[in-house]
Amino acid sequence: AQSVTQLGSHVSVSEGALVLLRCNYSSSVPPYLFWYVQYPNQGLQLLLKYTTGATLVKGINGFEAEFKKSETSFHLTKPSAHMSDAAEYFCAVNRQGGKLIFGQGTELSVKP
Amino acid sequence: DAEITQSPRHKITETGRQVTLACHQTWNHNNMFWYRQDLGHGLRLIHYSYGVQDTNKGEVSDGYSVSRSNTEDLPLTLESAASSQTSVYFCASSERLAGAGDTQYFGPGTRLTVL
Image 1 (cartoon, each protein chain N blue to C red):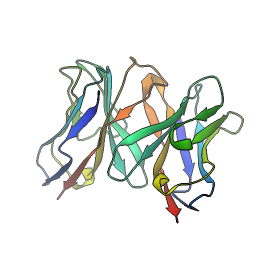
Image 2 (image 1 turned 180 degrees about the horizontal axis):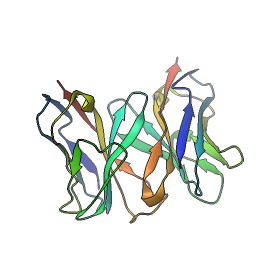
Image 3 (image 1 turned 45 degrees about the horizontal axis):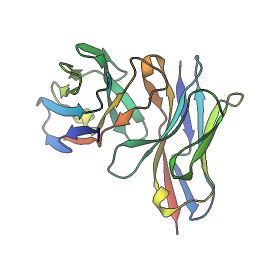
Image 4 (image 1 turned 90 degrees about the horizontal axis):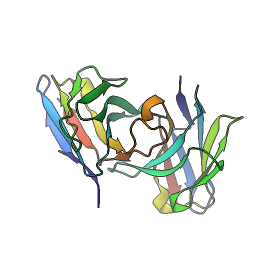
């Protein structure tokens, strides 16, 4: 069975600081992993995804994530936070048939 | 540009009423999905469809139904609304038929309140 755990429902960083949002997964099949971002009162937007190939994946808005099979992790990072990064972030893993399982979400706050 | 739209964006209804939430996509995607978003639960799958006349139950399908009569639309019906169905509902679509790794594109959501 597949599952996703996001560590920390709320993360707060200062503007310019490193952003690290944690995601661990379990999967009985080779995983495809996704990070989505949700800005207030909007739908989800894909930040990046890992399917096959390079384990370090670069996404939009300066975010990147590294697939670590041995640690079953897919943590999201950004070297320098910007006020506009304040949003909710969801990690997800594929299930059979193209369905996704989502983590509970992490709300990122950015302090000036 | 192709897009996915939902209507209404906000809805208030009373317990026991039938409610239909609309989802329309112009991506020409075969796969369409309905999720509900609740605090502490992330997004949970309600129903999904892989094509016209195809519908399937997700993990939280009780009290909901869908129908797929064309490629573009997947309306979600709450047969008899309950307060537990107060939530934000998202529709999504993806391109390939049952292909893992597909990006799902999300609509803007419908906030439903059941009084």
